[in-house]
Length: 248
Image (cartoon, rainbow, N blue to C red; front, side):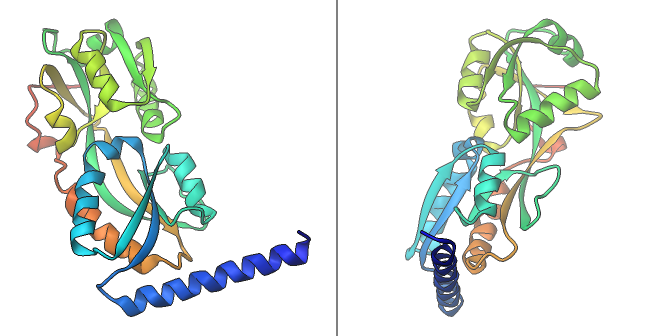
């Protein structure tokens, strides 16, 4: 296809998007149609299932196509219009052409086997085998930078991109890790001791990113509100029912 043909295809795509946008606006609260939503794997354990169930209840005519990936990948696909919006870890710098909506703030915590008696966070991180959350993920990069800032050198044993797998490794006594805490992850923590990182506190912020010119903005706005309500299951640091709490 020549350059003129590619231009015509792009014009047609824009016209279709405009028609979809007009339909969304006309539908008001009765949202309908199909929307492609990205989500980081960590959100699939708790936040997304709750939100998707509520979306189905409130908007039975709305179809969600869910794709999973790392934050950088999903933000890039959102920027190009391949997907309509994505639930990701808040980026350090938001790419041009994107806007974000804060959904939930999750404290990050050190998790250890329950039979590890020490409550000295620094000592644990320096001496125990460390299971690192995927450093290609934005949340993983945030954790790595936090440890570097504090001058803590860990004994790296594994690098894993699945929170559930990390929980199981820690529960089996194979190491310690730093992970985000929310109502879903807390339910998976029996047999594991948690210590919220404080002074400085460390949080992971989940946001929805979408294009500033997103023609599906009406649909995204409805989803954002549902996600925020689902994200209220998260906790502030002082409200966390942790078994141990140690200043880092």
